[in-house]
Amino acid sequence: MSQAFTESLHENFDIDLNQAPQLEDSHLQILMKQYKEIAFTKVIQEFGLGPFLNDYQKGGNVTTLHNAKEGVFADDEVEARFSRGYSKKVREKMYEKDFSKMRKQEFKQNDSISDAYTGQTLKKDGQAHRDHVVSASEIHNNDEARLYMTDEARGKMAVDEQNLAWTNGSLNQSKGDKDFKVWLDSPNPKDPTQTNRDRYGVDEQAAMEKYIEAKKHVKKSVTKAKHTYYAKNLAKTGASQGLRVGAKQAIGLFLYELQHILFKELKGFFKSFKQFTNWDARIEAFKQCLERVYVHMMQQMKRFATAFKDGFIGGFMGNLLTVFINTFMTTSKNLARLINDGVTGLWSAFKLLCQPPEGMTSQTAIKEATKLVVAAVATTVGVLLTESFVTYLQTTPFAMFAQLIGGLIGGILTGIVVATLMYAIDELVASLHKLNELMDTFKEGLYTNAEQVRATYEAAIAMMHVEYQAVLQTIFRQYEEYRRLSAIAFDETERVSVRLDASAELADLLDVPTDDVMRNADDVRNFLRS
Image (cartoon, rainbow, N blue to C red; front, side):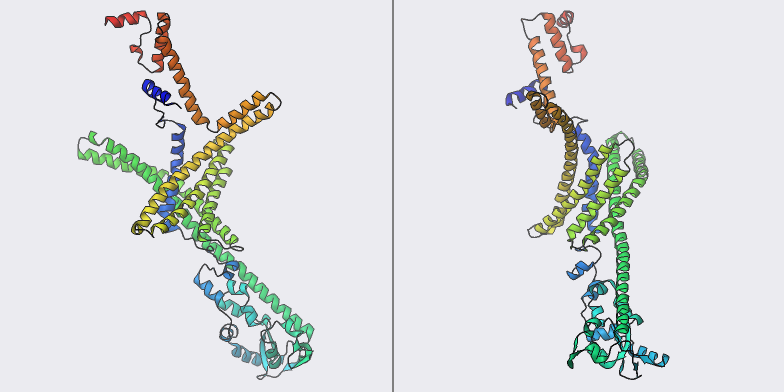
């Protein structure tokens, strides 16, 4: 736009194009008022409450089998249990506990002892052994058993009657920690021409029945422990994360509402401060301000409760999704946070879509739901970038104030970005809606002439910035009208009545008081006489 035109508008009509429009009810102001709560609340939640209520960690809150194999654990107890190696000491302490006592009781309770593998009767002496059908070594080296079961639970499983078999000492020592089925068909070390089956005269049918029973017992026990492990830990960690997120949502909204109404009341109080005649009146007015703040906050309690409920559900579901993802890949601490905040935003959006407020159209609900998700994810990304910025500041001379500076700058920029993204969504949705209408016209235009097609194309492009173009077009039209009327009013070749009409119309456009406008020859004469 030319400098001459800009200066002319400013000089003749007091319109400064170098300043942003300050219209009281402008579209931008309305949008920013709507977005203030979301943006400000998010910043409070993440930057003010996040350090106290966030507890995200690499791999999530529950140790999965995938993470355990990668060396990533949610707690020290599980890590110690899973990482403990197998040894003679472990076997004796965990898998053969009270073996001698159990053996003596068996001798007392039974008149005779039969070998479960050969069917032969065993003497009640040192040659009668109790064998783990599924060996202690195999049970201990079972990653699932070691993760999902406590040491005590694995020990009980190992010495359960379904996994124990009487046999002779020679066979037991030969079998050792090997899988029974593999050992059965293997060559005997003392006589390689024979298999262990032949060497020890194993009754294959009876032995395999015992072997299958033991295998099923171990598998069933581990599977049951797995279900119990995830059910217990998902409920515990899900409730914990849900409470943290719910508290963050509710407290964040509470603090926003409190500062909003408090500043509003205090602004009015101090504005009228000088009007009070004495301190008693001032104190009474201040009390009334606080009472109105209290009433307002009590009226918002339902919103706070709803925010807590939505946060709890979102946190619980976020924890559930994080655990599921960690069954096949390990999430970083930041990714776990993104997942949780994303799910929380998605839940709020889903709720809005399923139960939109009365009077809200489905299209508006979709748009508002999109804002909720974008605000949640954008705020989380802002927090993560802020943490990186703080880490950088800690390597500079500003290390002492790294948290303060980083948190302040990050919080402000994140709030701006969130508000800007939400504004952009409104602009995009409006533009796409108009563009869709114009594209329908464009399809019809394919069957008409090229001029109409080009006009439709130009209209579609222009629509992307229709709000700003509308402002400029209004200014241009107004300027043209002012110029036209001014030219007529000062044109000495025109009739006086025409010039007066143009002058009066120009005065009306410029909001000149009616009493100051000369509309005819009599008004001119009266003015000159006065």
